[in-house]
Length: 506
Image (cartoon, rainbow, N blue to C red; front, top):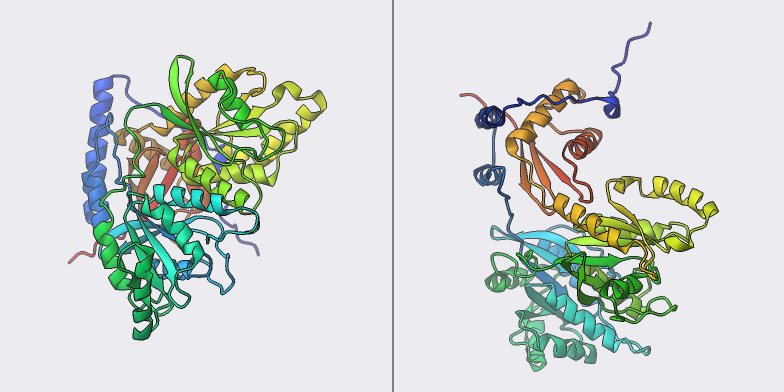
């Protein structure tokens, strides 16, 4: 005897037909009534303070909700002084990798933290250590960038070792900064170490804060002091109002980023050499293209993960990531004469993680042979299917061929990045979508979407209030349908779900 098993719906085959009134006033009134009704229904569910603030801040169709940028606290220091252990202590969970071996942390990693009701961002950085290959200059430049990206800096020193020449090297850069710098004397496990910490006054950064990241000793006092210097809203993470849009050029070494910048500028602004890795620092240039002013940022090529001894390349990669965070749209250059690699995909994913708009530029198109073209399309379909929504342009940075096509692609991506969907239209769309293809029943329950709102732009971010957890497949389905209905070509979109329980009746 067999029993029929419920079949999983094929979300991709579902056709959703929208039916809006033709009269604009009637449509607007209908949307407003729908929103009012759905929001009234939320009163039956348990909402927290964040939910209430989000709903209270909801704006009209021509306005955009701008969420405050969290202040940034960077943790810097030479290898093995306990930076990652301090990060784990601050965020209250073990996420940063901690080992006795120096140089475990190589990438700059961000975490969300909270202290005494205040949310902020913690940045864990790799250790600074000069070597015989002349890394001193790269170390100083990276220190400058790390400080530039933060609202305040925690400079960590090992109190059991005391101030070293490497510490003094970094301090020279920190002293010239206008950012608040707090000196942290880590590994102060007892009162005797507190006395030894007083010797760090010699670094010239003010009073040292003795802490033990391992035992949590002194960390609370350190955070209390940090909250006094951190602003309520980040000064470095704000998006500039007006001015030229910022475009970051990303890609592997020697893919043609500097050539593209030079051709767009109409002159030799940056050094171009056949040797990969010529560009070490992000180079900002204001350029006029198609009658519009842009600020292009040429970055160092992002290599595969490099060992700490290859410090110049490693710090160049960190500076490239910093340039991406300051940009609004990223142009990822891909060399069509070479096979798309895991490295290319990793760079694209880096843009997605940053939430920036994306344009794919296939460079050296004038050198593409017919045989290679067939394989290229297969590689794009296989490796870049997850960014099929990104505009594609085929260019030659060396000759300037089809460079004019870059501007419409940039404008399209940025318009999508800035797009806001009226709340009424969004809820009408999701209501018809879920009616045509409801969420599968799980454990006897079927999650429903109670209400939806767009919480922000850059990138477009949507919040769904639901009665239960939505399957990842169903969330991807919603994301795809949002793109089909509203566009968002060139912009990542984020769909967040808040599961809320019905209030108990008394």
